Image 1 (cartoon, chains in turn yellow, red):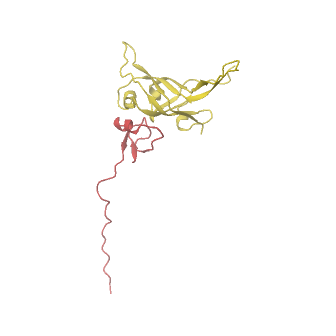
Image 2 (cartoon, chains in turn orange, blue):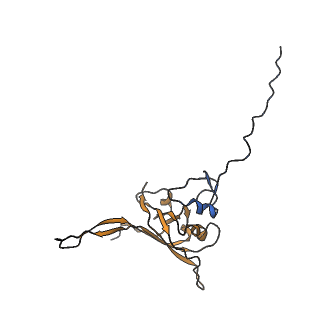
Image 3 (cartoon, chains in turn red, purple):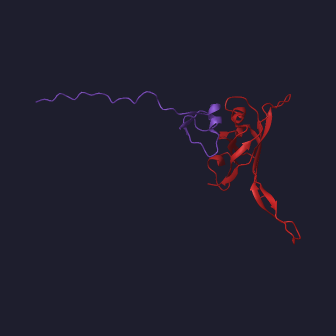
Amino acid sequence: MATSTYLSNPGVEVNSVSLTDQCTSCTVTSTIESLESTAFGSTSRVYTSGLANNEITMDLYMSYAATETYATLAALVGTTTTVNVSNTVAGLATPSATEPRFELVGCYLETLPVISASMGELSTISITFTGGVLTTATS
Amino acid sequence: MKYTITSAKVGIVGTEFVPPAGVNIEALLTHGFIKVETPSDSPAPKPAKTKEPAKKD
């Protein structure tokens, strides 16, 4: 039985710019690649840890207004940056054990959909930051 | 180099921006989120000249 509820309402910062008010979905994934180390004599496969390969994906409303989505992301394509995500907006500035801030430093933005338009819908884009060093701040 | 915040999306406008690790400064400058704080070209103001009061014998 769930002992606490978590209503998704995270805070999101890309390159120090708050995009919380444009973001509708965000996933931070910590991955350590597995390397097979099974050898003769083994009766089952064995793995050891390899390189970290972290990723942050997010869905954003597209806005071409000054200092909004497009202005924040346009100059980041093909470069590395820092992305911060916390389960609350307060956690971005003052992280704690219950409001951790996940920081992906040196992550790479490969692609940016510069226009994604459909009739009768708000324009949204999905972007992915890959690589970088993921740390968790709790104080 | 000192930077000043010019967009509320980054922080309190007018305060100093200290770039965290990994942040792309050029991108922030290009789109006007921050600006470089340039020192004034004019020389520092000279102290006001004050005449010493004439000594009375």
